[in-house]
Image (cartoon, rainbow, N blue to C red; front, side, top):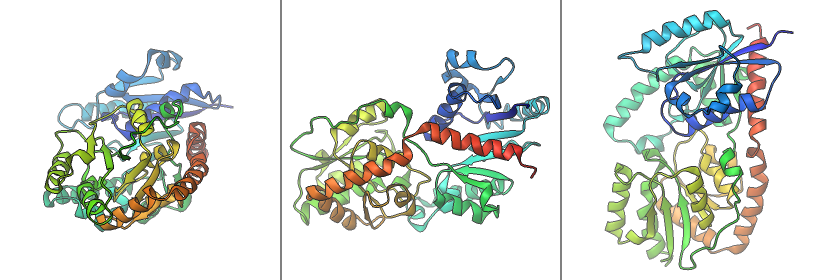
Length: 388
């Protein structure tokens, strides 16, 4: 029986972030979890190549690993890479091509499975649009038109939640069995770290509010939430920990809001943090605040469950699908609603214990990278064997 040939196309892996990390972990595991029925080929970006270890590369079969300039690079190398990818495809004749950072700007003759993780193009809501200034909205509208056009070319897609799958089915009109949901999992780096809480500062209720500088993370609600906690609920000892670049517009707006409400000491901004550093922050906190109004699958939800952080999150399906009743939910973008739930969670030890128990049960669904890997490979091989 001939092995199934799978070409992993990640020539567009250039920006390090959540998607990049997922791709990196998956590629490494193709050589750790040996599958004798699959023959792996790799078309990788220079950026990804620079981070993959020599140990990994030595395990790859000869003439199965190819490095390309980071894409898309329309001004210089795009057309060259397009020709070389087509030549590579013709030489390999893969049964299936897996593009885990999709949609991209390269088109293939053989069957392709896209992995899609951008809720802006499928599930954007009115709350998310409110977070964007006018010019950014125009750019996002244009970007979504392009993304949806590329998605409509897709024949098979992997995504992370049923919420986004529903959006993909509306856009692409694909049959339901052509869109596979493979949920995100806790990063392997964190699974090796003891989640036991470290000694807390008795002066504070410490909340992590992890998120990048994208406006839809809605971290700018924090100063108003603090003001309501202070004036309405007389809670003066609550502190948020953020991970924003100190020069970012989002942090500057939060900082101005804190000054206006005289709550500067109630937020500690740690800047960008590595996962190991973030784990240490989690262990020093007891609670988590997730005000985001748009996500595909927020890693913060499973990280909060792993580190037993009792969580208050915005009331959206992308949060409820993961955490279900292991979390308190507030009305999106409503600082008063958020403050009410925060007051409830910090003041009720019995509730905290109940949420801890529920989080442990929910976490079991998102702890096994091997299951994530196997489900992905199973779908790829299923597509490869399909006659469609």
